[in-house]
Length: 480
View 1 (cartoon, rainbow, N blue to C red):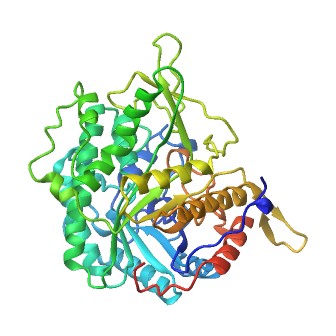
View 2 (cartoon, rainbow, N blue to C red):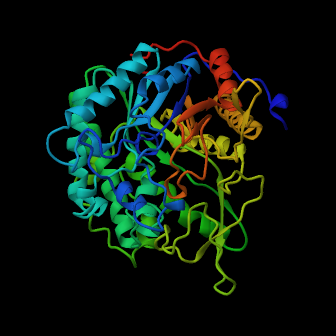
View 3 (tube, rainbow, N blue to C red):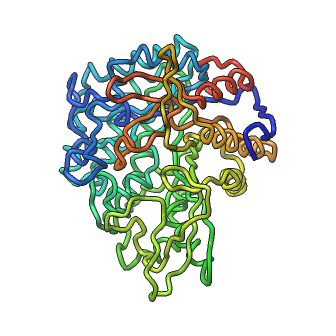
């Protein structure tokens, strides 16, 4: 079905249509104005860790192009903008007093958004842990969770009269399992026990940070966390067991403590040979189990799993870079099958029905929990065309179709009774795509990394029209 054949879109007036970015992926200015090094600075500067040796040193140079990028957002009519705050820009070593220049940058960003009637949605942590904290153990060290709470308080005191929605963590699954288990992400460790320890300390950091934010914010904002859910499909004999195991590691390791105040018993049993979970201390689960105004949902593709027979080569098509370690501690008997196409440039399958299924499932599990789609988008092989007048254009019909079909899936979920509050397309602009460097483009705005020229792709123009037609005006100073 082409975009033209898709059903018309219609959303409630309060439904937020926005876009999202992350600090290390776009800001650049890696060593300016007092910013300290993060684990991604160290990782990307380590030979062989990223495509072509790419780093976030300059990225999309957003730090120096703030006003122009804010104007660009306004030209698209965005009702909300989800950005992340770089912890090492606020506290260069992860501890101690705030760096005034770091706070000033984000204050100017928030002020600029409000001046353009765009609701500020701030994520405290999108993977850029200060390197000094990693040197002390990173997320395997319980002290990091408490340092994060102090950081949350500092930022909350500075911006807590203006930010509409606070998100503590973005995709803690990636931080824990890709960072400490598989080695595909910073800090690049390959230790299953460390990954599971990081899971808990990230969950604890969330709870501690929400407590601090609630104590210092003054504009009655909303509090959230963003999870990258794995929508699982089973294949072959033992498929149900494979789905159960991966669901426990990928999804329930976070939703159960966050929303029910407990860890799944089957997860603890599955991983008993790796850790005894002694890092969970008395009172931790109560602090993790904070009421959430919103649960952020990141969705890109589905994952197909089955039980490995132990004979044929084990398939590992889990959608993440394979650098030798495993992001699935305790489940070596599970294999990941290739998914049916079509696929994006990331090799991820395009399955909008998976988003609808996920939203309905979350609504059934947690019926009173409001949801928001905090990331959804696609990378394709974009080409810039230059017109006779020198104008630039990027025709990306695949991305337009992708976004349209996923918005339609969100609309179906709304119609089925899901309390869904908004949708943020990933990403506002092309950026540093972590281990893939600058080889993958997710943006609806093209970035020429040599000149830093921004070009609105057809998807940006299409999304602008969707926002104008289907989203009511939002007072950016208010919550949803």
